[in-house]
Length: 129
Figure (cartoon, rainbow, N blue to C red):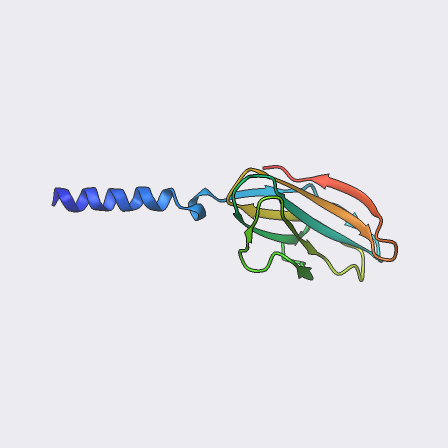
C-alpha cells in the first residue's frame, strides 16, 4: 500500500513540473481603436530554448475572443528569437486587450494599435503578469 502512495505522489510531482502546469499568463492594458485601425498582439521569445505560446485578443466588456487572424496557430513551438501575432478585424471601433499564455517568462509581448491604410503604429502597450 505504501508503494502505491509513493508512486501516486511521484506522478503528481511530475504532472506539476510539466510545461502545462508552468503556464504563465500575461495581459496588456485595454485600449480602443477607431474604424480603420486594428489591435495587434505580438510576442517574441527572448530565451534560448523553444517555448509554447498562445495569443488572443479579448473584448474589454465581456472578455470574449475577438481575434480575427493569428500566426500563433494552436500551441506552436516558438523558436528563440522568433515571434508571432494575433490581430483584430479593424472594421469598426473596438475595445480590447491581449492575453498571452506561455511556458516561459523569457518573452516580450505588447499590444499595438495599427492604422490599416498606412501600417503606422499609433500606440503601444506592454504586457505584464
